Length: 323
Image 1 (spheres, one colour):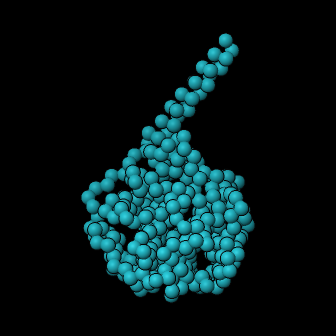
Image 2: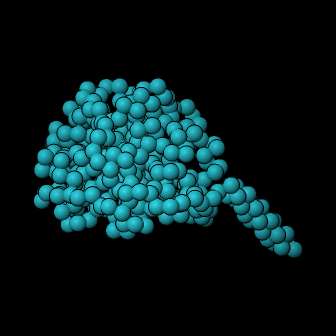
Image 3: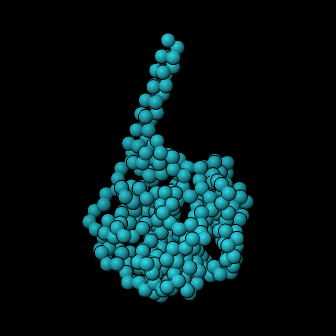
């Protein structure tokens, strides 16, 4: 008889949890798509040189959460563990990092957060090294990294800046302005106060894939920077066109998971009310819809959200290079 009562108690708990999850998800909706954006159909011309290649360097992984918190309409029974990654682009004219992941000084940097935020944003190295250490172990001189383009200046994207003191760091005026006046947990001044070489990033190139402007890094169309403000004031995307014909669009934190672009949907309603996730929520949602339409129009482009651990599995991992 006792086991029956225990069974009913467990069943009641399961039903209560299911009801709670359902109520939490009730505020989650797909984003309205509307008509296709002007200019989306025309693919930009590019002449990627031989020798152009890229790879990814994973530096850590978050403790994670239920997918239903990571993306609206996600599954409560699937646990997601976002990653912290840098993208290394090797071009005959120079090598750049798109984001840095977590750097050598991250523990001291992260200690600037209060106890609550240290728990919410906890990370696990899991034996993974900072980008600088991974490069040096493979004989890549750090001085060869000529430029660093953060997708945005949140702490988990620029922690490694102090590890590359001679690199030129590209950021929009709006991004530097927001970072300079913001505070933990999103922005940690210890990560960027010591930067010696800033370069002001301005989008003065022609329209690309529905974006009003662009910036051609090397002048051959192979690496285009695109304005993706919303999550932060000056977030940047990177469109990479390889000699093989493959194209990749790195989207920073517009969404944390590719499912957000497929649906399209924002992060969960609950999480967006617990944490101030976006500088301009409406602009970020517009960016989600924009990339959703882009994926529909150009299914050959591989879209890469910065933290999606599943998309990362399909990409080259350092020291492997893909061209």
